[in-house]
Image 1 (cartoon, rainbow, N blue to C red):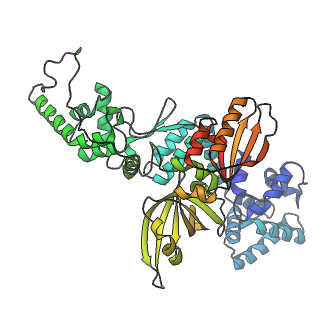
Image 2 (image 1 turned 90 degrees about the vertical axis):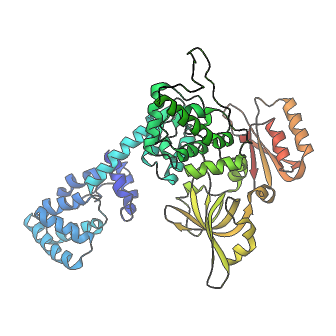
Length: 522
């Protein structure tokens, strides 16, 4: 805990310059010295480095004999760089040091030492509190990652950007986040076998009261069989049409049979069925569908509307409209090979990107707003979203004019531009806009194929040779060979084989190699 407390206090502007000395002294590679023996018990835990405000107070009190009130006044004066007050306190400090048996020179040296660090000192009690919480959360994430992430998602249930980051973190840890389901979900995110189940309270237009009503009905009578069964059993005064439509669009009714297009178009009829069922029950009557049905017989329900299914893009767009992000799939998945190869930044992991550096980001454009600049030229602002997060992007006049056909809502593009400080994420000042479907052809210079020497048969080699011969092009083909004995992989370049990075070529390759063993390179 002491190490964590020191890290918390040192990793801030100012004290950071002492981190090197702190580490060297901790490991015994640099000698720890003290201006006076009285400083040792105060500074021993931090290897002679003044890190905490409490140390400043103790030095002023125990070395210079100041009262605790005077010592705290000195701390505040140094922190605020109040030169007039510090000059007065310096005199009192040196006079007090002399009374404690120190020389005037040594008293002045100790004052200058604490003056150097006091303005950067951190409150130790705060650092201890933060560090204990950090230790506890790190322990929970290490030993109970699903429970920890589910709790974080529930805590941030109204913050879409944070939930996206947490879902991405779960994926990195191999934890599945399952879509919402009226037969499985609860109000908040919960841990289930093999992953985390999405909380229904995170769905737009679905309030906590409606979710509790659904859960209560499910727990009393059992899982819902279909949309008609759902509507006849839930309280339709709480779970209204807008709520049910949002549940359908979010994918929470996928377990009720049919596809989302059918479910959505059938909501009205299902509600009418439910209302009739409730009306009959209030009069002590069974509905035509329930009359005379014994427990051994199969209940009969109306058929769903016969309508075509939504396309993948439409389904995901509607899903995002009520969740704020994609959960059952992602429009970018189709282009994951290009994104992995050519994007230089994952938007959600851009903390180390320097302002002014050139970046390439791939994602979906949204919130596009146009305006006329001071020169009378049209420009645009918007956002670009990848798997990990969202960033602001700016298209100035000449860039907008050149690429305006591709700067539109839901366009999937690769942007090249200059990174600017956007606060918690980056802002991209765009120089180029490339439609994602053209990126592979424009940027691929090489293709890298990774082979396992232990399982690569002569037959597979011949098949690979045939595939590369069938799809000739201009991209150089590299082969990386590794074995399971821990030897360093060998990389070979073919002077005779050049390929065309087409969809057909990669489809043929994936019949021989796993997708992660096929890489694009620029």
